[in-house]
Length: 219
Image 1 (cartoon, one colour):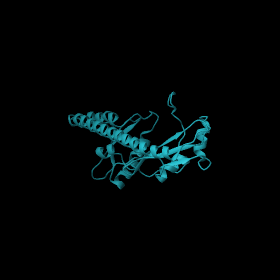
Image 2 (cartoon, rainbow, N blue to C red):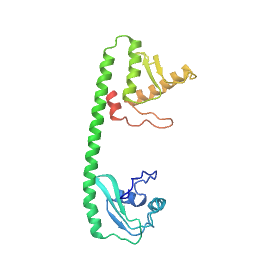
Image 3 (cartoon, rainbow, N blue to C red):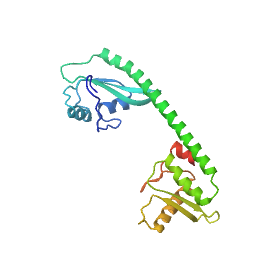
Image 4 (cartoon, one colour):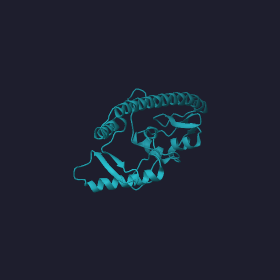
């Protein structure tokens, strides 16, 4: 961001510990630097935007011990330098910025949870009103889209005593996919769910991931 011009979104990404911002985030300490020689990733980013100055102030945005981000301040030309007093000002401002960001994130989270609960209530009401099994399964598949965006979905009903798949309802799969392949996918998912005894996120070649808050509610 530069005064008098439109903010620019970049594709650059820094991990914690990388570049000036990453080091500041990892250490939880503000810094005033006059050279980016030790922070090569940051130098690359500055050069990409035509910034010749390497005089930078950087301060972590911390709220309740959690780093929300890092704010950097710099001049476009190398001739201007920052003072320690200006670094102290930035620390004070960073606290205010972190407070505002934290409030925004909490409000966003609250609104998201409220929307999820509303959708869950609507889906539960629709499902409870259905009496026919075929109608119920179709309704569940359709209602899932309001909760979880997906390209394909499937429901596998089990025989209680043997735990074998008794019935299968799928949606969104290519018509060239064989029924046996869909059944095998269901069996593999079934094995993981029985073993973990909880809702999981499955990725090919990876261990199950922890479920999201919404998935825990569905489970």
